[in-house]
Image (cartoon, rainbow, N blue to C red; front, side, top):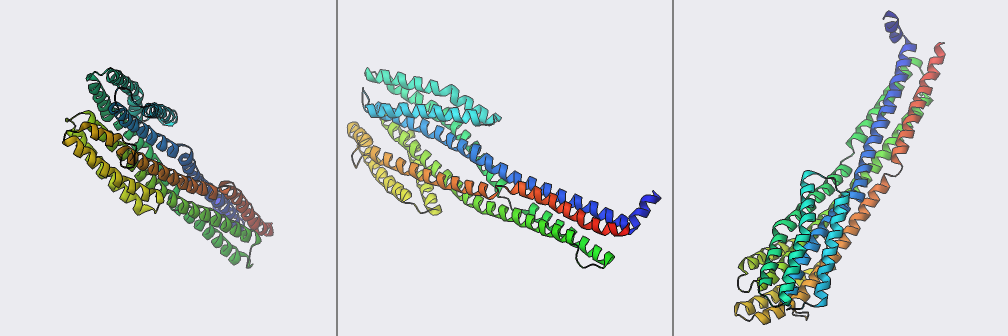
Length: 416
C-alpha cells in the first residue's frame, strides 16, 4: 500500500495515472457517443423499414374494407345485377385488404392489442364477404331478405372489422411517433460527453505545463484536436438528423390527418348508400353520415392549415359538390322518390354523388402519396446524415487515446 501511495505521489506515478485516465476518458466518451449515434440510426432504420410501412399497411386495411363496404352497398342499390365496374371495385378492395392485412401480420410485433386486432380481421373478413355474397344472391333473385343480409354484413364491418383496423392503425402510427422521437431527440449526450473529454484534455495539458515547464504537449494537442473533430462531427450529424426528423414529423402528421380524412370519406359514403338500402329506416345511417361528414370537413381544414396543396384544394371543392349531391339524395328520399335518390347517389355525371365521392377520394389519395414521399425523403436524408459517423467516432476515439498516451509517455521517459 505504501508503495502504491508513494507512486501516486511521485511525478512519474501521477503521469502514469494521467495517461490511464485519458485513455479511459477517450475510449469511454467515444463508445458512449457511438452508441448514442447508433441508437438514432436504429430508430431511423426501424422507421423507414418497419413502422412507417406498417402504419400505411394498417391504413390500407381500413381503407380497403371501408371502401368494400360502401361499394357493396352501391352495388346492391344498382339492382338485381350490379355493374361490372362496381363488382370489380368490390373484389379489388377485398383483395387489397387481404394483401395489406398479410403485410401487417408478417411485419408487426405481436403485442396483445395488435394480436387481437389481427385475429379479428383475419377471422371476420371471410365472414363479411360470405354475408355480402348471400345478400348479392338474394338481390339478384329479387328477394327482399337480401337487404337484411347486407345490413348484417355492414354491421359486422362497422362493429368489429373497422374498429380492429382502426386499433391496428393507432398502434402502428404510435410506433411511427415513437421512432421519430427516438431519432429526433436533442444531442445532449454527445455535447456533454464531448465537452467533458475536451475539458479533461485541457486540464491534463495545464498539469503537464506546470510540471514540465513546456507550453504545449504535441500528443495532447493532437488528442484535443481529434476529440474536437469527433465532437463537431457527431454533433453536426445529430443536429442535421434533428432538423430532418422535424420535417419528417410534419410529414407524418400530415399523412395521419389525410388518412383520417379519407377514412371519414369512406365512412360517409357507406352511410349514404346504406341509408337508401334501409328504405325509410336509415335514420341512424344518416346521423352517422352527418358525423363522418363533420369529421371530414375538420380534417380537410386541418390539412390545409399544414400545407398548401392543389390536391387539397380539389378535395375541398369535390367535398362541396358531394354535399350538394347528398342534399338532393335526401330530398328525393324524404319525398318518397327512391328511384331518383338512388340515381343521384350512384350517378356518374357531374351532379352525381358517386362522381364527387370518387373525385374526392382520388385527390386525398394523391395528397397522401405526396405527403408520404416527403416523409420518406426526410427520413432518407436523416439516415444519410449519420452514414459513417459511428465508425468515425470510434476511430477518432482510438486515435485520441493513442495520442494522449504518446504525449504523456514522452514526459515519462524524461524520468528514467
